View 1 (cartoon, rainbow, N blue to C red):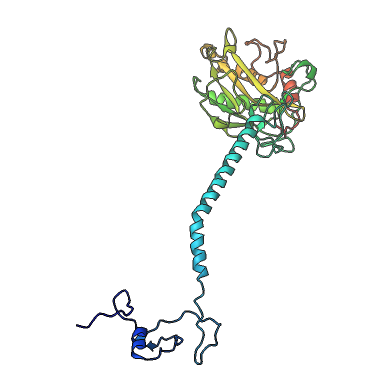
View 2: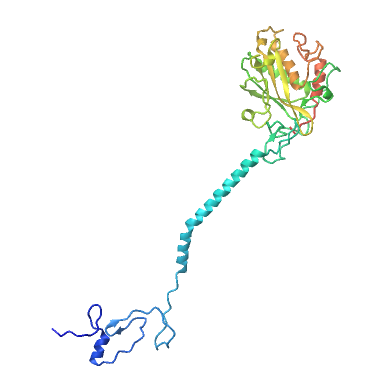
Length: 362
């Protein structure tokens, strides 16, 4: 066993190489540059240098080692990934806020203003003035698009009465006696029939009477077929859910005084057109009803003609604008049992009613 010494030692107890060289009298080995491939020095292998400082001249045969460039693309990608969730969150919040504001503005605009409010009573704006806004009457009720099926000229020729007579009257107010309300002769008058409670052959009888009124007025009537629609004394002129986006066709059917109070007492029929005044200032009929009292079915006919047929003709006269006349020889006399078909005065009035102006604004 060797005697203990006082040589400096490493933490592991070994004597450093430079101490051994000094004790043996050997000069210290010179410090050499480490090559990029590594060299053996004093039995140890050096590590590969990562860079060289230009403070001292570079030894012969050496070349500088360029440090690795930072991987900026990877860091940027990592940075984008780290910020991406926050970006999505911010964008989502902005979209939600914009949606809330837009919804609020629409609700306030639609509930606080009406571009059709304040129009004169009985008038409405023609389609297209407010873009997609529906047409409305001054009372707020919706209206169909204007001018549907309207031709630039009348569909049938003007009818001239066979005899001159002034035994007629119009439903229009007295101040408009020279310009009575009428249906537009430039579009067809549509009608439907409800056979509820009607006798056999009623549909054919309606067809006959309609041809007669068309021939007398020069208005084109179009049969839209059979329907089931309850009688209503205040029937709507515009029923888009039932008849589409147009004026409702004329309804012809039997009824009683429980559903149509106007049929109470000795009244055997009630009819009339629904009038509308457009921006042109001219009033036209756009829809209407013809109701026959079911009590007619218990009354005897005349010469094989059912009792309701003369009443049907009379009510169709009301539908197109004729009023009662105090001449018992005319069909528009208010009491049945006198005339059974249209007479000279009736025909003269029907001819004038068929000469109304076109109604492209209705």
